[in-house]
Amino acid sequence: MENNRVMKLRKAMKEQGLEAILVTSPINRRYITGFTGSAGYVLVTLQKAYLLTDFRYMTQAPQQAKAFTVLEHTAKPMETVKDLLMEEGIQSLGFEKDLITFATYEAYTDQLKPVELVPVSGLVEKLRLYKDENEIAIMQRAADLADAAFAHILTVVKPGMTEREADLELEFFMRKHGATSSSFDTIVASGIRSAMPHGVASNKVIEKGDFITFDFGALLDGYCSDLTRTIAVGTPAAKLVEIYNIVLEAQLHTLEQIKPGMTGREADALARDIITKYGYGDYFGHSTGHGLGMEVHESPRLSKLSDDILEPGMVVTVEPGIYLADIGGVRIEDDVVLTESGISILTHSKKELITL
Image 1 (spheres, rainbow, N blue to C red):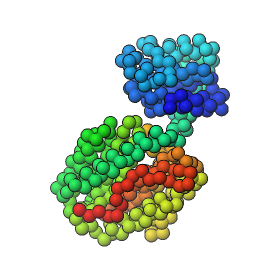
Image 2 (cartoon, one colour):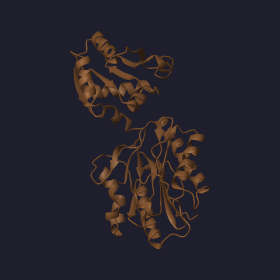
Image 3 (cartoon, helix red, strand yellow):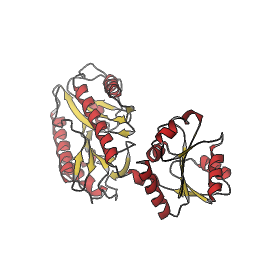
């Protein structure tokens, strides 16, 4: 796996005329090497691949990064990087310009002289767009865990419980069943707070008649799931039921029609046009979806501004919503893999309105 990723990275480097690249992003470092430690630098040249880390990981790193030469760097890591570059006669080095601060850039420039630093954007991230069979298998397990957590919360949530107590139930269930953590800060938004698209769990007490939006996911073996369901506790207001049915129609239509070859803009319109048709276009203020993988928000984007082309192997969310201030809101979200013929849906929790 790691060898194949290094080969693809080198191909991308050659296309951009790079002699070498320094990978400092923790996510990209893990993707390229398989190393799960918290510290390290990846240096890939056209001939060699190095993982530089400190004393703490000199047993772990060789076991995980088997395609890499693992070295313990000095107290000043860039000294080790410079020595390796000098050994190979490399005069320029690509760096992840979107992921380091200007202060770090200045330090690298000073410490690596006379090597020229070349800003590079998204080189590894473009490789991460396309998930292989192993990655999709992990993401399916992460999605299955989110589904199981949702089934669990349905047996627990009730009037009188706070949103944070519900959040804790979800977190504990996922951790108990193998998750490293949640994919992101869990959203549990009830009553009028469900009109907040990112209403992270609060001390609000869940009441009869509330809609509750649960948006959460499991980080499992380095990959994220992202599931949203909206339920009712007690008898909800007619307006809430109305917008629920509209969002469900928009979400199901998008899942039926989305396919490779579409732009993110076209995929977004599948849901947005239906919500707009019913007069709620102004109340759907976020994008229809986003890429998903080692991070919960990756490329491609399913938005009205996105020209990203959807291709087989990409994993995206489909999550339309309607949010009415002082009334409540609805969002329904699934994780899907783009295939050669259409999509495969990873999340399978019930979507018909659940009333507890």
